[in-house]
Length: 253
Ligand code: G3P
Ligand code: MG
Image (cartoon, rainbow, N blue to C red; front, side):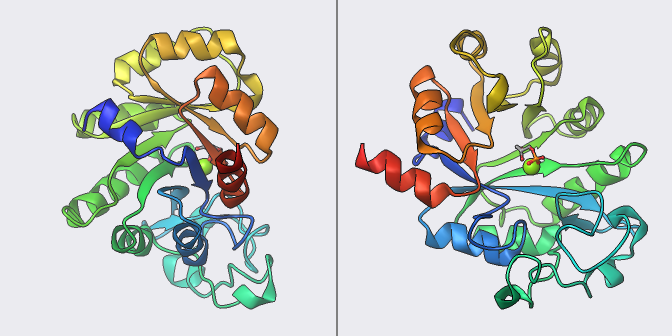
């Protein structure tokens, strides 16, 4: 897919970060469904693997913050992960939410015609297994995938493994702190997008990235003033926990 075609999908230019995560528990089916109801076109979500190898959608390495479980995701079997309550921490109304599998999330996004940014969070030493598992599931679901589907990671190794396995995958690099040599890896991996912590962006850095013709996405932006500023600098889209607030505010302008 051409960059210009992908850009077309950034309207509104707001991506539901972990779904609509201020309205429903992050990275749950409820959060993705809510994003659709709010009129979004894109959601972002985080993927890692269970001890038994299945890809699941959850952000933290540990279970404590967003479930009633304990310990690390990577030490827990898929069967045990599926028993956990992934919604009550947010609101008892969501007590039926479970940690979704990647398969379940892809099915929902495809059904709801949502575009997606799948972010791979691989623990050190598990990069290869995580990438293989994700790519296997994408292959099994070919023809029934969110479109566009942008795959990203903070991990250079994950991105290198993805590119080795797929010459056509749409890849994006995630950058938390500014790195002067950001472009070397992007170009080696043939990334189409740079996903960057908005706090390290300046107008000059936006110009530098856009001059090299990457899509530029900034996280995590939850105030209207900052959203307007970043978009006025030329950022293509923003990850937000409260996408509905930003979309409504930007429309009013
Ligand atoms: O992919 C953008 C953003 O989600 C990266 O940070 O920690 O929220 O996954 P994090
Ligand atoms: Mg993420």
